[in-house]
Amino acid sequence: MPPKAKFSREEIVSAAFGLIRESGEDALTAREIAARLGVSTKPIFTCFKTMDELKDEAFKSACVFYREYAETGLEEKVPLLGFCERYISFAREEPSLYRFLFLSSRSNNESISFSLPGDLHPRVLRSVMQFYKMDEASAKSFLLNMLIVSQGFAAMLISGSCPFSSEEILKIGSCISFALCKAYKEVPGLATGDLDVSRLFSKLCNRPQDETQSSAE
Image (cartoon, rainbow, N blue to C red):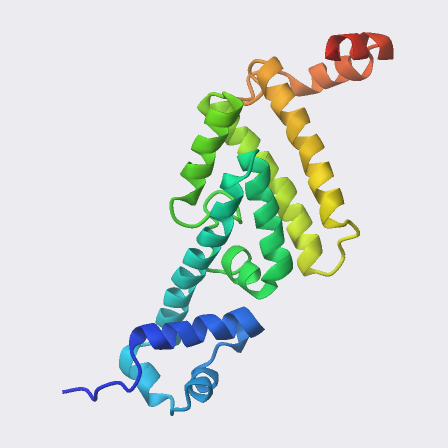
């Protein structure tokens, strides 16, 4: 019969999550967790076969933490902007967890490096469809582009090279959001790629300024 662990799996996962949050994934070792708990490494491997198994559980805890963090953005007046603002704020306030969740080998890289954990992505997508009165194809493309913009700001923040204040980031994001929303609503086929974007863009750039302004009005 295996020896009874002094600490539960949940307590060990909590210690691992705390270590990653403070110092990053590279700091997560059996020795560091044992020191944090005040025990030898033996109880850790009584509960977990490998460190990878423990990291997987810590990743799940990080997903839950981020989800609770991000969901508050969906309660804002403009849910998508609120959500993106929280995504960017997460990078600013929790850089180690951001790297672990969105930039590590455990991130879901099937389609995009910052695939949102759990069922959060479909929830945000539904919110976009409802708020902006968009079909699913337009909403998916809109959300994807806004997440790309958000990841750009997040990358600058965690690298310490972001020249923009929070207010400036929000203003830039709002302008991009407005432009994308207008384009998807007024240009059929844009979201699905069923048109020659280069030709349309060239035509737009060559329009007289007064014509462009009057059509916007």
